[in-house]
Image (cartoon, rainbow, N blue to C red; front, side, top):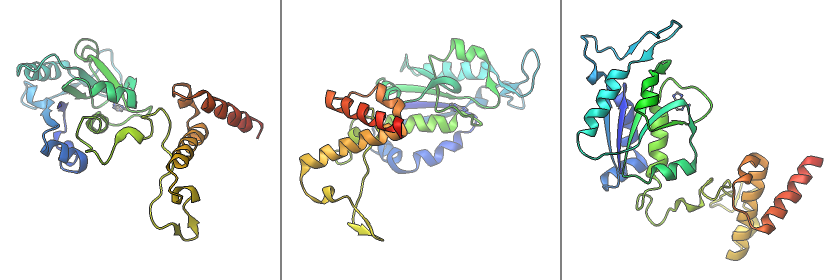
Length: 247
Ligand code: ADE
């Protein structure tokens, strides 16, 4: 999978490609990542990438020309069509499901917005998708682009190896993950739940599933509407949410 990232701050991606999962995925050839400085496609002496908004108002707007031209030049290398994803607080909210969707094509172009906005023609005529990582505003799309790259990379075949599987992760099943413990069995008088020491794998699996359900019910009940639950689990949720209501 190849990521092409358009940004005014390519150096921000150095730490991403130099550490952990992404570093290994690049070394093993699962992923390649190229950054492009939007300023390289400006045509004035000062390499101006932004301008004041038509109609007035505060703040600056990223100009369309350098972004369109940068994407044109990426297209020239032949691997086309690829989704062109604009990171913006106005995009659809990023989820595990969207990460899975974006892991489908073998190439993604990510455009990092900056300042107060990006010229609307980039939204309308260049981007094929717009993604927000949450209902809050950052100074630019660089951190959101890193979030997308990381979430997508973990899903690519071979990246996590066979030992660590993404299948149990929170959100993969539509529920939050169950609590995890490791040695020691008692730490500062805080014990690990007995069942996990029992060696009874069927009971442990049942306990974990119930913990996932309880935790999701308590912390993110909104997720339950989309999760795939057995009839028994639906009854469990209904019983326990009724209990919450009368508390
Ligand atoms: N740019 C600024 N804030 C953002 C957000 N929350 N998601 C995506 N891009 C952004």
